[in-house]
Image (cartoon, rainbow, N blue to C red; front, side):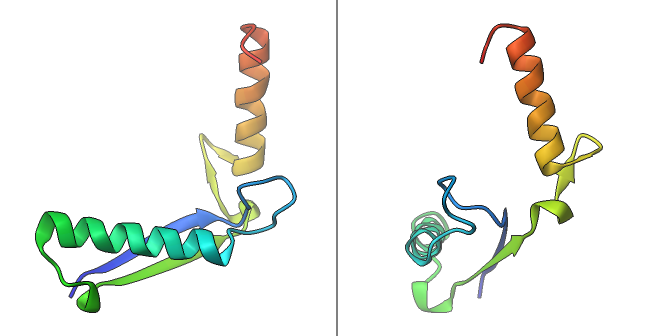
Length: 83
């Protein structure tokens, strides 16, 4: 019985969305489940997919909170002329 846990930031795929939509989450669940079926022959009925949404204040990398890190990347790109 595979259990797949996926962590995503609590942001939507558009600037107007505060979270992933139910349809987007359903597509993730379906896609991951089918990968396990296709690659490992794990039945869909025995595959569990858990999606955890994490506030961007609780997510970070590069030593910075997520939004600050992304801003730093944008700033660096604009310095290099890649805006």
